Length: 79
Image (cartoon, rainbow, N blue to C red; front, top):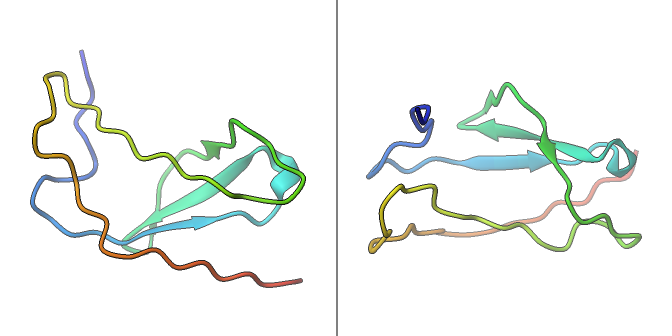
């Protein structure tokens, strides 16, 4: 039994990925400024930092509509 998607069809959302510590092997996801309850794993580690984010439909049937990404922005801050 597939759990209900937290992203709703036809609704724009803001996704923010925060990588505070690349050594932890995961990142924090915020959806419309609300924390997603589970860390997202970093599957392919890189010595140069994050360079790839993969978005994939989880539709049970063929996804003929896909999804739209309006923009992407990266902010690098040193601590």
